[in-house]
Amino acid sequence: MLPDYWSQATSDLSRHDEVMAGLVERYAGVSLVSRGDAFATLARSIIGQQISVKAADAVWGRFAALVGVLTPARVVELGESGLAGCGLSRRKIEYLSDLAGHFAGGRLEPSAWARLDDEAIIAELTAVRGIGRWTAEMFLIFHQLRPDVFPLDDIGLQRAVFERYFGGEKQSRRALAEFGERWRPWRSVATWYLWRSLDPVPVEY
Image (cartoon, rainbow, N blue to C red; front, side, top):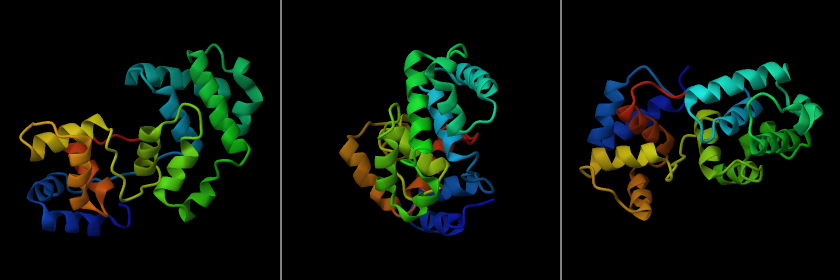
């Protein structure tokens, strides 16, 4: 199901940007899709840090089997010692325990996020050990479906902008931020299409 803003976003982006118009036409019929619940999405992002997709899938499978019902309360109940043995590093076990504690203690409350702007949610998420700004931005794009996130530190976004608009020449972070203003208030959508220009298979978090 398309996000309710997708049609308006693609129309606006296509009207003002020939490159974007071509991408919108090429990848018609697909869009951002939100999957899973907030806790599971963030837990998976932590498990997947700095390892291959294949390895992350294997560790996630063992973690999910060990936990059973994947809830913050269950992870808190198991404790750090209870998460040993499923392929997680000690640091990632600490991160997952901290994430579960934030949910279980009400410091992360998904029902309140609709009232918060992007930066407020990023501030809440990055208070969790193991979650940096990039992970928080991916969560806003793929889980919350926020329409105007521009993840400046994303390597794929940088590469796509440089290739599609600057003949492959790298630009400064500041220049990239300024260039992205042309896509406001639909920078998440523009980013999604730029990712598609590098890899036509949509990523799902």
